Image (cartoon, rainbow, N blue to C red; front, side):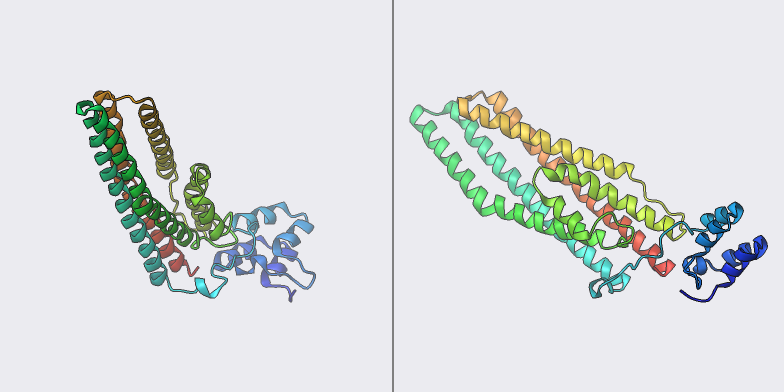
Length: 298
């Protein structure tokens, strides 16, 4: 509580011209309380002056007080340092993604060649080929597959975490840790990515609106990207399931095996090629957001 500001006095007197002049010069009094604990909006509402109420709302009086954007020491880095952290995790995500994808392509290609050769082998040789395929799968899983998956989830967690740290706590729909943590839960992440990534753009837009900036970040492209990622994962699962069924029933039709294997390889490569620029596009949008906030003194 404090003494009445010039804005409080002008509202008390019903002087519209002075109110407009004060709001045009500085809206910093919008959330200041007078000796009775009233904000300008609460005072105008108590006086039942609809014209002044609408005027105050137009200038942002209906918003909550300005949130603390960097409430802890970890958020007190300057914009360039924060950009470097985001870039580091974007690069880390990119490297792990490329290694994971192309190691999977190599494994799938070798396994496909082994299975295609079964048509030309004798019965004992088929058993040896199947054993070789099983050993290859185990070696790939424990030496490359699982380590790459863990590394990717780790880097992706920090990638999402650093992005969400840029949204003010008073505006962000949840904490950065929650948004990032739920993004790496298997299967659930298919749903959550539609919250974490388009939601990031939405909350950045809310921040821009709060500070009176006209910049807006479109969500259509990022929603479409999430839809493509979901479709890619589902189709890849279907292909893997089909390959497992073919192996279980002992189907050795070369045409079918070739179709499944090549489709899976093609899907992996396309997914990687599509994902890489999307991650960098998201990074660049957040960089734009950081620069705007820095210009606003936020």
